[in-house]
Length: 225
Image (cartoon, rainbow, N blue to C red; front, side):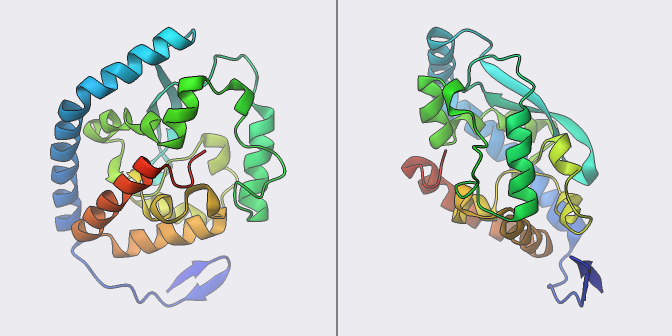
């Protein structure tokens, strides 16, 4: 018996060999990440050069995120915004509304992203999720998996209800169920439910399906912002 949003539920998810799945998942993560970095290295180099030439600041953006069992780790992305000393209070307010009010990001009255700070190359790499590719390094380090719930910021984690924190019972991923089927069009609560579905049904076969479905989402920039 589990409890979600103060409602007791009987768990009926299929019982799978967690130890075997986790080991196989880790092996596949490392192999595919190394292959991905090697094959994409010319393209990643080009993106890095364009970022450096078009705006001041570092190529990579690193920030603390919350991962497995609520533990923090350093998260890598290509920098898509100009450097700012703002405390990002507007984003925090917008994320609080996103989490507490259950709206999709596109429905929020306050923008989660300060679009004025997004660079020209940043608009493209954000929409196509190319800015996420450095997370392959997080996968190799063991902080993330190729597939899983997305990691969140520390202040976001503090806003979660206890049942919502169950999504951190597995490694966070570069892609996942709601990233494939909705991205910014999915409400926070729906995204958590989809993540919990993944946690309960996680298999290498499901991972492979989600990885394959992520490719057209990136190429067509579906739901990106």
